[in-house]
Image 1 (tube, rainbow, N blue to C red):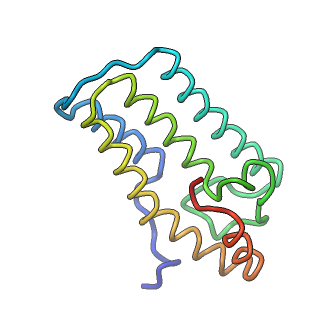
Image 2 (cartoon, rainbow, N blue to C red):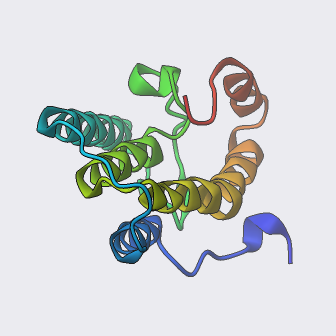
Length: 150
């Protein structure tokens, strides 16, 4: 089966929740404490990035459904999308980093790393293939100018 035909059975928000729960249940290794303001700052940055990126998709009147990328009607490359091709996922990473700081355990970082790896391998790469098929050279040029994450 071609990669762009492959269906992702698990929506990215569920992967986020799974990783957050995993971070909570992992046995703590090398516990530390972080200032409360850092937890709030990281979580706030994640929420702002996420809301801004969804808003840009809504304003462009294109799909925000990560399981139906083939329905994309616009290539969004302005605003926050000038800095990251995947700010919705980046926002979730910041929230997981805030959660990691709140938990105060080095082992919890495994949940953040798992999220980044899984989303890159099983979601972003599929999305990129679909977007390349839909938008062609415009998407290829965008990829050359803008990093996948940051």
